[in-house]
Amino acid sequence: MEGLAGLVAGVGYASGLNLYAVIVLLGLFGRFAGADVPAVFLRTDVLAIAGALFLVEFVVDKIPYLDDAWDVVHTAIRPLGAVGVALLLTGDATAWQQAGSAVAAGGLATVSHLTKATTRAAVNTSPEPFTNTAVSLGEDGIVAFVVWLAVTNPVLALVTVGVLLVVGTVVALLVLRLARRTWRRWREQRRGDREVRP
Image (cartoon, rainbow, N blue to C red; front, top):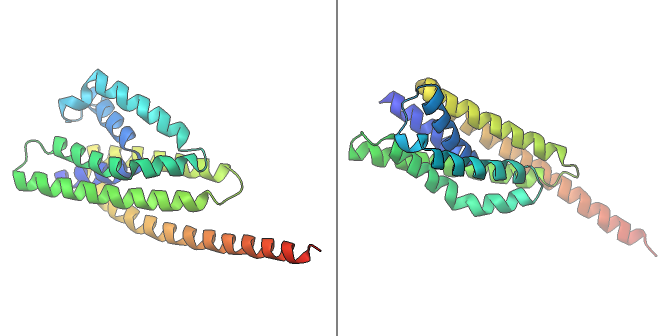
């Protein structure tokens, strides 16, 4: 039961950051590492489509403001995708376990997606693009790490997701506060510039 909970928690949380990467990673772990994943993730067409969408997201996610638009579009897609992945992973479980897993995965995906979207919107207030790229690469790394843990050590994945939820919330609040302060300074500077003009 703990193994199933950790697997669902890991893929649910990771799906909120990058659903397509989760599907690709599950397929690759199933094909090349012998992970016990449903056959649908091993299909070449599923891997090809998810891989193509992952590549699009990989590029878009590093372009300031375009990434915000992508996140808005995926506000429903990522949580619903997480629900679908959880239902596939719990195919042999009882109906109650499937329902609980679907709700948990969807909820975790929603939380991680909102944390990501909030943080990225705040980061986009930075005048240079490097911060955005670094944050995006960091998120990609987290997705890979969490899915790997979910497949290889579900109990540790469960603990890791708990830690990531706390850390993500704290970071999002700090980044929002910093963005608000930066925005306030910018407005005050513009107001001062206008007053200086004759």
